[in-house]
Image (cartoon, rainbow, N blue to C red; front, side, top):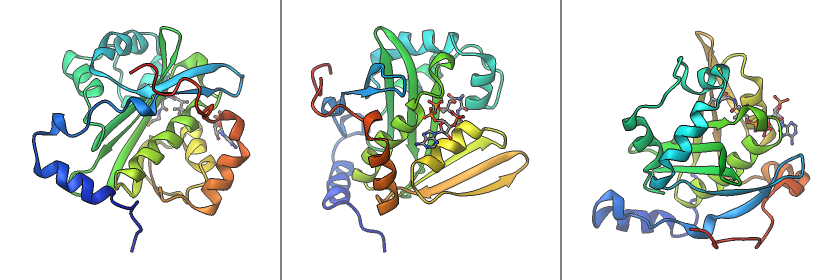
Length: 221
Ligand SMILES: CC(C)(COP(=O)(O)OP(=O)(O)OC[C@H]1O[C@@H](n2cnc3c(N)ncnc32)[C@H](O)[C@@H]1OP(=O)(O)O)[C@@H](O)C(=O)NCCC(=O)NCCS
């Protein structure tokens, strides 16, 4: 049987019994931190907020059609108002998104959505074209996995196009034991997110990409 982080499921069950979803968890400002790209640039990583709507729309407009297609599996130059609401308004428990910012620009988003009634969540990522291949995708996965695990989620799944080597590369580089299935040119990747010796070793090996401990944590909700 899977080991859940101590207390986390009890806490969530209690939260579910009380109040509506929007009051489940306040904005987790303790998760705001700085991260470093492979190019040495320091960026801000933080949970998304409802008032990031404009930032997200601007980010989306700046993406290449190829990146949009890989993320949304369709030609999708503009996000609808309903999509923007859905993407920016999360409950920080069953639906979570981290964004990465460079100054006033959004440069990456990683999110998970719990599959209702399960301990699985589907993940999706998108990084600005000019910031791809600098370690941001992997940083987003690290932070999402930590948070999801602490909230009782045990497994991530993702659908990605068969030729999306960057996305599969991120999953493989995480150190989690990834399995994948190919059907109709779409790969379904799946992996448990319980920390393992290998995932810890993988992180340690790229420690200079990871959060600068203490720098800026929590100072910008
Ligand atoms: C897929 C995507 C999110 C990856 O983000 P990224 O910031 O470019 O990813 P990273 O730089 O962390 O890592 C990706 C690469 O590094 C490799 N990598 C990262 N860390 C590594 C490590 N420690 N050791 C070995 N390889 C590593 C991966 O194999 C991959 O290879 P590539 O850059 O040569 O293609 C990004 O390319 C993107 O937004 N693409 C368009 C949207 C999309 O495809 N979304 C996925 C559908 S959910």
